[in-house]
Length: 580
Image (cartoon, rainbow, N blue to C red; front, side, top):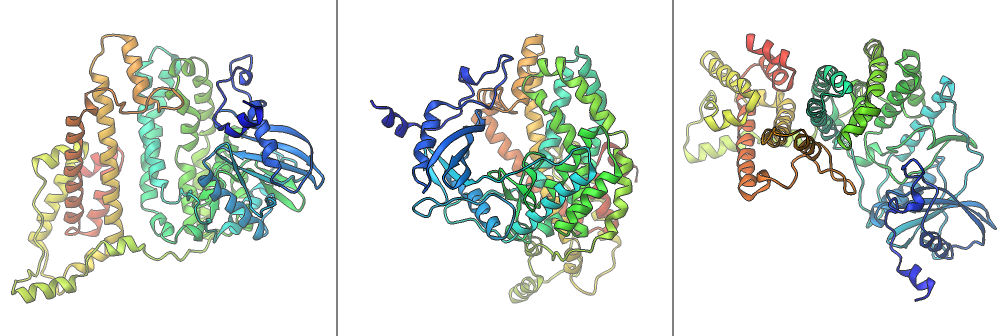
């Protein structure tokens, strides 16, 4: 078979397993691609009206199957890039890059093929050719003025991305509605860290980690509650084109100073999002790089971003919450789930010392920064339709009751207390169920007869009730996952090797043959009976969540707030609620 036929049949897959990609220390380097891939790139270039005199590999992603070359053409320097995602997913970012160019953003322009297309599909991946922008130089990491330029350029990028709609056939990339899942995933992983630290307690780093985790987990829980009470639900109801795109990997290499200002490159990971998260990542990572928080730097970075993309009070609050959440701690420690022994023996201790140093003045800075919130105007975010539509109008119900000759009670009767099954399903939050039911009965016995139906009270509590129901469902799912982990851990304590194997299977996700994620398919918990039992438990928990929400309609707003705080607060909050 000829070489050209082999090239035509070549399908691009990750090549990090090839010996040519391995560095002497065993790591994977980014300066090698298979010969078949380079030959495929040359064949793709024939689809363009250009003569290529040379090509040089700039960087590659061996673990994903992507690469970029600089090519010298009769039209000047250009780049050719193979995008490692599926073609339909890559079409989303290709359309975004073209849209941003047309909006006047400083991003490299796509070169069309001789057929007028913006990309070529070959080897099962999408390929693009773009302008090569030069000169490009990174801004200084130690100069606040340079960092301000980086933030201002990011704001301009976000502002110009608003209104983007992907081309037909593109797989939409969106993280707009996934902030809660992101926080919940981190909170679950923090519990995994605690279990791994217990299993590997002979390492000094394990003791340090165990001493830090209670505070870290309390901070995560507290700021998750703040997030659930923020304007997030109303903000995302504005829709994806309203917010536009976040780069998702913005930093010193993907935002560089060039002709006219900051140029932004490497757009293949863009997604719909509240784009302020790009700024949060830049701020918190910079504070870690600097070894501590600095109010002048944080304030300067936000002000510069605001010059490029004006923000409102609700967005500022969301940025503040995201900075307060232990994202950086999780990012630096999460590698523990893949190779606990090596990571704890060689890397974890210095990382934890760095996190402790960085956090010394974090809360002083955030406390001072919170005073800036009133500098920003309030945004216009109407109540989300999903929250308003959850409550059925009472007028049709009253009319139907009258038509049937039914008597409509002047005061709604309190719902019955939780059943034994619901009480068991509630786990550690069973005390909240009892308090809600008791409060509902007490209120029903002493409340005056209202002049109009209770629907007015329901409407006032609509937003909080819907958010609380979502929180209960997600928390129930987390408890089920945690229960599976605990059950697996308790099956046998007979040997150190077995315990470590279970810890790895319990904690690590499956990535290219790595250890499995929580709830591995092996074991009785994955049998049909086990699955059926979990489904039944899930149904009971949903029923319990619905009843808790309905009972809360019959209690005053002060108590509703206390119950909500107690439901997902720290242990000291629940204890305070019980004493109350």
